[in-house]
Structures are given as C-alpha cells and as structure tokens.
Amino acid sequence: MRRMLVVTTMVVVALAGGTVAAQMQRRGEPGGLPEVTAGLVAPPGVPPAITRTAPARVLVSLETTEEKGVLADGVEYTFWTFGGSVPGPMLRVREGDTVQIRLTNAETSHNTHSIDLHAVTGPGGGATVTQVMPGERSDFEWKAINPGLYVYHCATPHVPIHIANGMYGMILVEPAKGLPPVDREYYVMQGEFYTKGRTMAGGLQAFDPDKARDERPEYVLFNGRMGALLGDGALKAKTGETVRLFVGNGGPNLISSFHVIGEIFDRVYSEASMGGELKRNVQTTLIPAGGAAIAEFKVDVPGRFLLVDHSISRAMDKGALGSIVVAGDARPDLFKALTPEIANRHSGH
Image 1 (cartoon, rainbow, N blue to C red):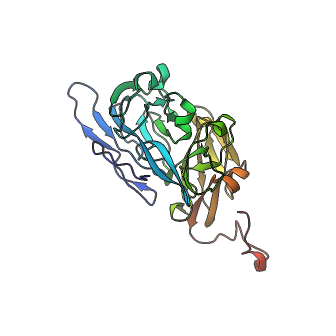
Image 2 (cartoon, helix red, strand yellow):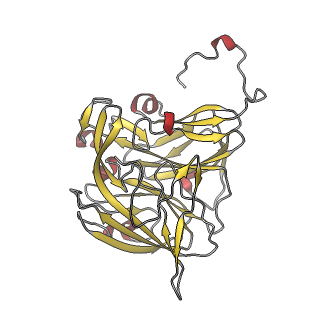
Image 3 (cartoon, rainbow, N blue to C red):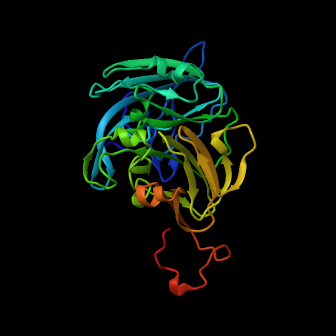
C-alpha cells in the first residue's frame, strides 16, 4: 500500500524530521473569500500551522482507493483508504473557513465509498451527499464553526466494514487565534483489524465479519501497520523540545487508553475539545472510538519512549505499540541508574 499520498491536483507537503513546508497554495477569488488548496501530508506528518488571520475557502481533494498492502511482517491485507494511506491524510483548516470537500472514488474500487467528517454541521457529516460509486466524484461544502480535532471516516453501509478496513482520518479545525507554537507535531491514529487468520498468520488475510461483530480484533495498530512507528518509523525529538501529538481512534469498536511510557502529558485537550480548561499532568488519556485527543509534553531525558494503548495486551500482543526517540545529553539530575550492572537488561518496555 502506498505510504505517501499522490494526488496530481493537490499540493503535496513532505515531512522531514518533524518540520513541514507550506501547507496551502493560494488562488485569487475576486470579490469573495481567498481560495486555497489544502496540502495533504501522509501520517505521521502534520500540515503546518495556519498563519492566515482571516477565513478562506479551502478545497480538499480526497480519493478513496482499495489496495493491497502490508499489515505486519509476512501479512498482507486489502485496505480501503482515503488517499492510499491508513489513516488517511490529516486535514487542517481554520475556524470560520468555508471548506469544499471533493471526494473521488477510484475507478479500480469495487465498492461505493463516502465521507462523514465529525467537524461538519449537516446531515451525515457529509455522508448523505457523498455516496460515490467507482469512478464517480461528489463535492459539497460546509463552514468550520467549531474548533477542535475531529475524526472523519467512510459512512457507507455496512459502516463497520469500511472503518475496519482502514477508512478513517482526522481534521483539525484550528481556533481563529491558532494553537500555541510547539517544536514538533505528529499524527497518530489507532485502529482495529479483524482478520480471518490469527494474529501474525501469514499471507493475504480476509476481513472476518464475525470477529468484528463480536469486537475481537486480531490487530490493534497505530497508523495502519504493525511497527509503523517503530525502528525507522519512530517519531523523533530532541531534549528540551515540546511535542504535540494529535491522536485519534478510528475504532470501529474499542476505547484507547493512550499512554507514553516514561513521559507525563503536560497538557491534554481531553476528547480534543477546545475552549475549556486543559487537563494537566496526565498519565493516560481515554480516546473513544470515533474520538480524538491532543497531548503535549516536553521531553527532558534522552532515550526511546513507547507509545501504547495501556490496555496492555493490545500493545504487547496485537501491535498497539509505537515509539518516540529523543536525542540529547543525559540528565542525571532527572533520571539515572543506581545499579549499573543490571541497567541494560531487557524489560517489557
């Protein structure tokens, strides 16, 4: 499965080491709102903060696809996607923007697809007007009036199948005054996969509707693949930096107990809501299926820190495991081993 989104009609923004290039390509619209075309970034990348100080008309072009990809080492799966990645690209708009969604279903698809954005005020979140068959396109527009981080997903019957096959992503509606600046932003989304074979059974795996109905996933994963955020895919930071994680839960069924082992969240936008009081000094935050959270923390000590669903069997046995690697000088004033002869033994972390 493609890990980078390729759409010829859009400006694609690359992420390198946690920094991002320009998000939007501007087009003039005499006598109306300025028009911009949303740049899309593959996960775990995040579009850059919006610097505009006034609303605009934002065009978002998404393509739904069905394509074979890697679920885990030796395991393949036919993913249903927004833009060729699981999760789909993160979208970023500003409070007050008018957003035009252009949804195209690839001619190679075998199923009808749609989009329901939880940020939309309107029937079906857009799903009622975007039931597109293979080769079709549908457009609709809506006004972003509620700031926050929201899930989007396919809402074509049977909805759980479309979500379980990977059709989810997130959209950030930045408040008009923006978010406080941080050093790094990353996009992490949890989802479940219900395969016919048991966990790590090899070959091309089919979707199992009975396991989905019984809420018995074989895999619970971050960003659509076992190990997507480990090794070369690990998130990166340096000591002294503040990291902001945009974390979502595509579900379709389970609640995530999101935790970073060895870190404490300095600030959490609980359920990704904005405008209220932030939670501070949080160890684990709950993210419901179809929900999100924003977690911010300063990294003070170098090392590897694991991202987990602290329903811990999901992390250790089903794949809900990622990492952030922090580079920098040691901080013995904050953390040091007092028994060095056992300091390097392997732990469950």
